[in-house]
Image 1 (tube, helix red, strand yellow):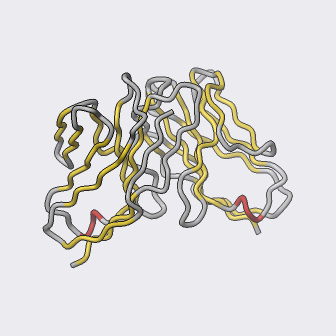
Image 2: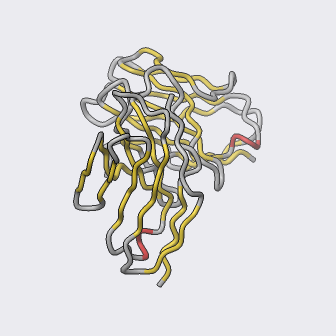
Image 3: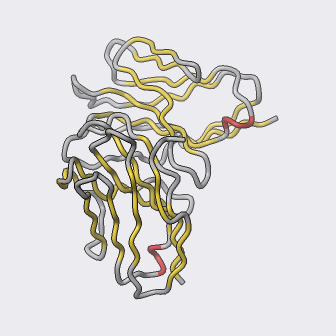
Length: 113
Length: 110
């Protein structure tokens, strides 16, 4: 158990809809990272937050947004969903900004029908 | 940002030692090398991290030569349960993309 929690575990929705994925980092960790992993694909970095502020941005679509709240939990919002957004979404956390050691959550499996 | 290169896949048999090498020619002075393991449908798991020479923990060893342009993850006496994808990551990465790359898919055969 990494100490990172993600909810929900599974999500099934329809195209055009909007969903919110939630992540609670390990106790004391200030950085949160979001990744997308499609079937048999590598991890695609989406975005990093550190202590409430956006620190790094990867290949995140404009339809996607994220934020980190004062209690350090984070939410990833996915809107106008398309079939291709079906994937595993992982959240990771680390104590520092540099992300040398990231602890990953179990992921949220999103299926867009 | 240091780019890494690893073999796409490797096969091994149970009980053998497996060595996976990662190349990172552009590694910076303050970069650490970190290896992760990922099983299907699970999040990657931290295995080991090092800066130079050799690091060993209960799971693996990490060998880093003096020029630090490569590193080798060594898994002693692998079992079927070591079948996974192994990623090499170089960082820290401040304000930049965290690139895990395709990793090395290790298949351990009975």
